[in-house]
Image (cartoon, rainbow, N blue to C red; front, side, top):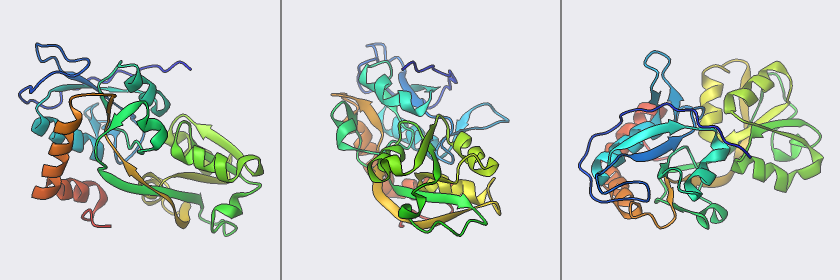
Length: 255
């Protein structure tokens, strides 16, 4: 599958280099960091500035400053992120990537920095869906390459019409337009849409499925794993993480 980079370079954080990574030279060249531009409120394009903003963007900026590296930010479709890290085309990724055993075989993850799960989203006037079993026989939108897609395939398989979309906005528009009966995806993203563009038109139903944790993704064997983990630990210890969490989710990180 071809993955097309959507370049959105940002001069992000300024810090002293502490070493080298697979793509970093001895001259302390910036690391290549990649994200998915459609996973709000974790990462999204600020229409006024043309820059990427969001929870993940604040996290990686703070991590980089503390770990001691500069970086250039690029964007790409989510399903291209793990292959890009695996092949060493980029150094680091942060895009609400769920830590899984399968992914951990080909890339390295930082310690978890966000606890999540999967939720169901349906039209506001749809009372036929209360849990995953109620999605049998229905059309479901989810995101290509995501753990939500894997979960649907494993638990519903041929019993539902599962459509993977390249971007989260695509699947939400499909729900609003009636092309799908439900969306199944990461809880924070589903919740954010239901309270913003989808307010009054959609609703979140059912329990939280498959508790998940997000991690920062690094090239296998990267020497930046330990500095990144130390930076995350410091941020949680001194309250910086809670401040960033409150900024984007309206509450502290104790969920």
